[in-house]
Length: 403
Image 1 (cartoon, rainbow, N blue to C red):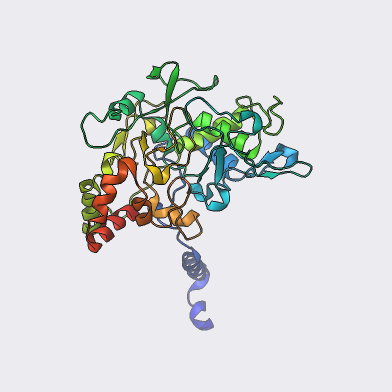
Image 2 (tube, one colour):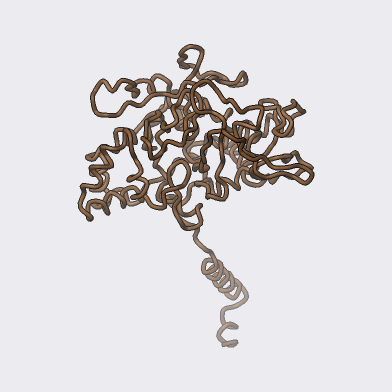
């Protein structure tokens, strides 16, 4: 063998060595999961400057772990944003939030007793909160984050056009917006529509946040106990204190959330997936879980005037007694919940420890169970689902798992 190599000459041996090295590196490379198996990652078409902001927001959201020295608490729920949204996916029962203090549209009656959110953990020297006696409350499972920028960019007029408060068309569906009082720091959308001094919420389980800035600033404050110039009040004392996070960091996280890519449907051209989608439409699920919406103008061109498939209408719907937790936010009723986007549903197990915890509080352990808990405006579709054959049910579930 040595004799064979010697006949190659010096340059030949070098070339052979490089070829072997290249082959070895290729063998060692491990391919990552395909893009449609991941929830995190930027929306396509961002500029280099926008990608830089995305990365900064990614680091702040997923890598910044707060301690008492950096402002944590003194009472809190979690120590970072990413711990409640692993891989930008759904949360787990361990990270479920508890909201309390309001059961009608007159406002929260327990703000002086720790409302609206329970901080069940504390740093040394402080006691965590407990739910005050008599306070209505509900459990909120942290949602997936991806595609939020598209939902944020839907126009108020498009949302209102979908509303049907008195069920004029007689289909049993009467979605309504959640009209909320917005904080002073929020910048109104160019097309903002108001009613009696209130504006349309669209973010959160009951659509109680106007935009991603309100959602983010509130989450830092209520979830981690971090004050900002937007939400300056300490969760333990109620006193205004100096910001513990910069406006720039908040803005970076908001930009990150806005520019996370939308989940990509898998196997969407397979016959069984198409048949499942047809059944989804036939039994009326698409009346609330709209297959398509569109954005209006956005200063981020990748989000501007885009059609997307989140499977939501961003409206509140009465889901009946089964999902009535006796708690509400804004003008929503206790049994009303914003239609949750279904995109990313098939990847939910990845961030939920290999199991499913669905609906607003994670009570449903399967897609079928979640459907069967749809009362109120969802009752007609539930009944039609129950009337499907076993094979048709499997096709419908396969479609939902492809999202």
